[in-house]
Length: 491
Image 1 (cartoon, rainbow, N blue to C red):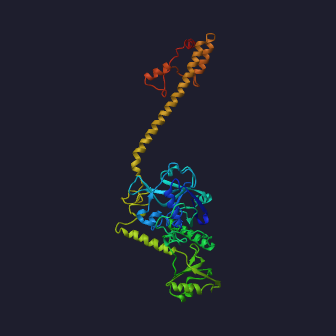
Image 2 (image 1 turned 135 degrees about the horizontal axis):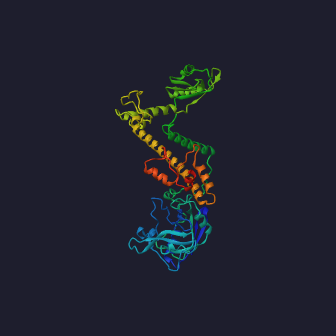
């Protein structure tokens, strides 16, 4: 019990049916193949390395599709479209090429599943997810290369291959079941219906020839032009990306530098009324740039000038004319009108920077909105100098106090260091018993300055001066040293 499925260019598939495990399902499949019901059925629902589905003669994407019917529904009517599904516990979706009938819950009993004409062929192994959801009735024995082609086909998001893969023909190799009452097999394969032909995308065998290079280049230039126009619109050079140049403006180039606007106006005026004729000149020097724009009142006059004035000799120069591609004037007109509309939209309110009169440019000085101060030139600083005078006085006084403190601190530090050296010398004199006179001489020479005056030293002298209210800056009274050696020396 086998069936051959012809899939056109993809190849052929041979399916062996498991009549002992699912007899009613196998009978339905064999009789539908005998009725040529599957002819021109599309392959759909392709899931890579999982499965694909077929069996709907029109396809699920068509609104004319009813989802398919069993052989008993074709013979007895729509009420017999489905039949109870058969599940055998020993049959699993463990191998590639397992053929099973698609099932759905019954409308009468949700716990029961029913089948029609659609069936599934697996593209992978160990697909236990399908166990209990699809009823197995056969397996592929020939045509695994066809399964690989289907598995690698380019598909859309719904799993429909972009290039059609269809069941072209079905051949029943062996059928052990008698034909049901009322079944009349067709003598030959039927012609595809209009509904089936409407679902064709890229027909099988259709060659996808390469695009004409000229057409491809034209399409590329159009895309590039649109992208550039959009960029110019974003930077403000064009009012909008789809703007087109005027059809009544003629572009003239290769002019003689001595040619004037009046000369061109006189020459081209014979074709029609001229609205403007301008030779483009250098802004700094005023010299002609040897090209001009001529705007006619009518498009027909511009076309006549284009055909008649090509290569004409003007002032010993053969000119070249073409239709203008410039939209500069259109852009200026649009920008001027747009700004005027914005200014008049809020009449009486006045518009300033950014569309609001409350916004103004940043300036260093205030506007002369107050009476001028005496001696000023009609303006005023951002900060009034009088406002910062008290602060400046306080800063000056603080700096003077800091300078006085630093000078006093430095003087005390210098005096303290000198007194420490005197104390160290006296300690050296008292500790030396062998040469007391020599020690006194050294102390006397070190304690006298150039004028013969001795310096006071020691913490006792400083404490006494602090109690008497004196400091190191004034004249200090002389006092005698308490050193015994110095008293004997004076005697």
